[in-house]
Length: 235
Image (cartoon, rainbow, N blue to C red; front, side):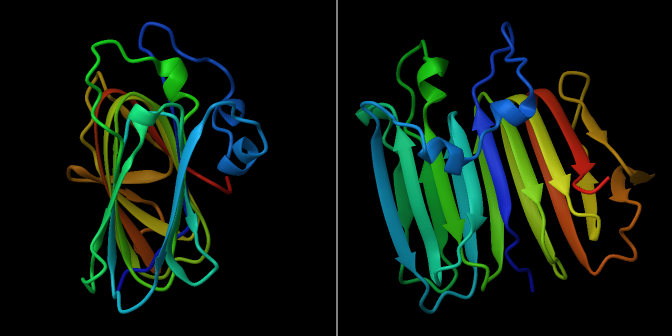
């Protein structure tokens, strides 16, 4: 059985022709830090979903840009969602079937109808999603133009799958040392994947601790143009 692991996933707009070269620790500020800033004219939407008879959950996120944080919920809820956005036309759509025992929670940015998208405005968007640690969760993250930071920490004694389908940007995945990881590389010279502490077995990359680890993560990463790096939290 797969169990939920606390993760933080942060998106910020990135242009190919004009990259944001600020240090990553400044660029990928946490949602908590953003909460302290006043947001003039910002819109927000919050929703809490009760944990009832659900035995599993699929999280399906489609996100145009801004900051996205996914955390562990400690209040006994299935999901605690808080979404901030700059304009009414950017209001996200939340879809959830409460009657299913293994539902899908979908959170999606609206389709952009304009040919010119303001990435300065998308930078002000902030989503925070807290999820229950009591049931297994499959993660499916779809990003547009952006840089992402995905962090796996805490105890991990089971197996899970993380699907990432990203557009243009730089992506960083950080793992705790006790986690065994398997990566199906789908990179090219336009979207290289850099792995630290991994061995190659055929066409698949395995972390050096994979055979000894009690818990494993199976990554399927696809992206357009950009760079993905998988590294360790405790080097």
